[in-house]
Every structure is written in C-alpha cells, then in structure tokens.
Image 1 (spheres, rainbow, N blue to C red):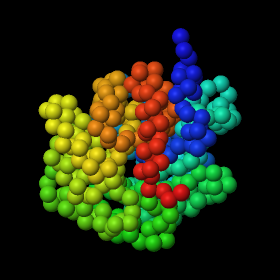
Image 2: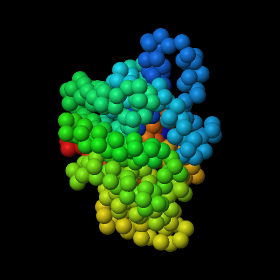
Image 3: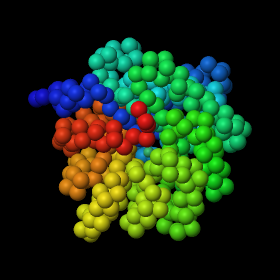
Image 4: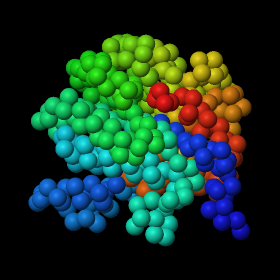
Length: 376
Ligand SMILES: [Zn+2]
C-alpha cells in the first residue's frame, strides 16, 4: 500500500513546493498551541490555571467529543480565547500563531520534528498568511484598550516577518461579530477605518464571524447595518469576506443577499449554494459566485467538525460541484492548534479518502494566491 507520505509528496507540484502557498482563513485564537499558551500563563504565575493536561484536553477539538455543530465549535474557540487578551498576551499569542502556522502548515509532524520545532523539508512552505481576529473580544470586557491590542498584534506580526528576513508576508482580517451588539460592531467599523490609515499594509480587510443563528442577516435591517459597517471600515479599498452559509441558519436567499449587499469577493464556508443545487437543482447561487468571481474559503476539518459535511467524501463531492461550475475555492485550516492538524495533514486525509485530486489541490493553491488581500 502506498504510504501517505508518498501520497502528499506526489500530489504537490515541484514548482508549488518552490513557490510556496497562501493561507487565507485561519483564526488567530485557534492557531495558538495550547502548550505554549499554557507556558505563557504559567510564567505569569496565575494560581487558577488547571493542570496542563487537563487544560489541554479540555480545549483540544476532537470529533465525537462534544463538538457537533458550529455553536459548540465556536464555544471551544471562545474558551481558548478567554486566555488570549490584553496587549502583552496578544503580542505573544500572535508570535506563536504566525510562526507555528508559517513553519508547520506544510508539514506532517513526525519523529523529532516537534523537538526541532518543524520539518526542515516541508511539503510546501507558507509564503502568505492572513490571520483573523476580533480585537474587541480580546479586551477582557473592556479592561484593555482595543487600540493597544491592535498595536501589539500588528507590531508582533511585523517582528516575526522581519525576524525571518521577510521570507513570508502576514496580514490581519478584522472580524465583525454576529454575536456582538450593534454599538460594538459600529465602533469596530470606525476603529478599522482609523487603524487602516496607519497599519494599512497589515490590516487587510474585514470578515463577519460568530454563530450564524445569532444574526443570520435574513432581516433587511440587520444586513443594511452590517453593510454600513463594512463601508465605514474598508470602503472600496479593503478586502471583504464573511463567514456565510455554513449552517442552515443562513437560507438560500439570505446567502445571495448577504454576498451581494456586503459586496464580498470571498466567502467562508459557502455551503448553502451547493446544498441548494444538490437538493433542489437550483444552480443560481453557484452561477452567481462564478459571475462575480467570488472565491470560496474552505476549511475541511473545521467544516466536518461543525457537521457542515457528514464525511470527507461529501466534502470531495462539493469540490467536484464547484469544479463543474467553475467556482474557485481555497484550502485553509481555521483553527489548527485546537484541531491538532496542519494543513498538510488535512490535505493528506482528503487524499487518503480520495476526496481531492492533485489537480484540485493545485487549483486551490492558485486561487488562494489570486484571492489574497495581501499585496505581496
Ligand atoms: Zn472561520
């Protein structure tokens, strides 16, 4: 039997291995190794942090251990993020998230790599990385100032890039929250506009995240409000993406109106138009994505954990449907530290299940290079 190492090694083109890849949908909060997070807390000498194994076991995501939908998935991310607040911690968490994602995403950790820190010969290096965060959720309920949080994240990102002789580029996407009050979302929009004036090369654009059931945007008033937030934050200049259509809380017409009204160029986990086509034969959502050149941001393990798909084979069928219509898609891995999987590991699983072909992998890499909000 062919080993998985050969499967992924054979699937990546030599030119791709040389050029590297772009990852554009990873959350900062889910990208911080729990052991490193724990060490950070231990250094502060906190007395109420549980023993390390208990701490890690509670937060690692594993299928069949309580995660059954987007809501429970987000609860776990939120639990990990409750330790990630304030300028000092966010500076360190950013360093960990960026370096771990850049150095490990293209590898399948095995013998000795963890002790070394990474594999010196990855299946593919990471050249561009977009992380996303909602700084208002990192203020410890307003105890810290959001300006200070952003300043420390951005400074930390610059430091890691400089430290590696600019071998890669990193940017930040600011997430509005479906679960946030109007007041806070509007305040965030104004802040993003301000931050982009001084940190425009790092703060690339905006996203909408959080439980879809909290605000599905089926109400015109909600949608118009979020559209206003997007306009204030990035106008016609910055990147526009949104998590939309991962659950049944977003129905087909809401999916279409959200994409159009927010003028999205990318969508996180857009399953709604695929399911509409599978169930009712309505291909208008897929055709709209092609027509407007809207790129799908897919995160296979995350989508499986939230039960957006029942199997990886079904995930593969979605890729085939996208290909049938010519919808562009990308591969990222949402919260690698909590899922305990690098992007290479996720791709390896897809190859093992015959849910992706080498051509589809390369196609996804090309689309990510084209759709990134980073300039270089
Ligand atoms: Zn996400």
